[in-house]
Length: 204
Image 1 (cartoon, one colour):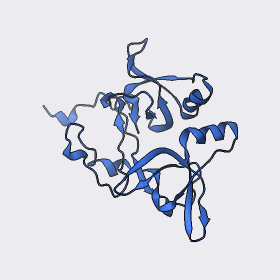
Image 2 (image 1 turned 135 degrees about the vertical axis):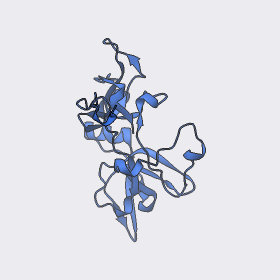
Image 3 (image 1 turned 45 degrees about the horizontal axis):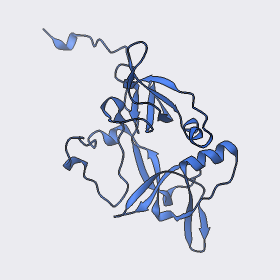
Image 4 (image 1 turned 90 degrees about the horizontal axis):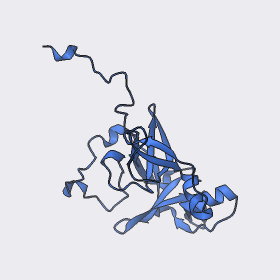
């Protein structure tokens, strides 16, 4: 039998195995022109990195360039309620911007979760973060997720449940937009959520 002539039964079903979303690739903020609203990490090589932050435009004081950095929940509150929030100034060389890389960049760079040695990283810079299928993840509630909708990446989402069996028998997770996720914390208003099958969700 010539197996090359057997048609792919899932060839016309793009949702069966959607292409993974692009990975998160941190780049130095010093080389970026526009920073307002960008997700950033701050830290020092050899020390560590802090995420879930947003940047504002650079500020120059004397010969130094700084980036105003705001905790992400404060950023969303400021945007939603049009209020001013305190933003400490961080030297630009200690700030990295989260950008979207290419799928090809991470094709061979995804470490095995069971192989400790493959997970070792350099402390010189924040690591590139490949997306992880929710089906392969542990706890997902509260995590940033990406939904794949007909080959389009829907980002700025948070999982609000762990995996569960939906009414139709599908294994699902409920998600909400990040604005509603953070508003839930500062106002107590429950978010509007959407049930999404797990095979369409990835952890950022």
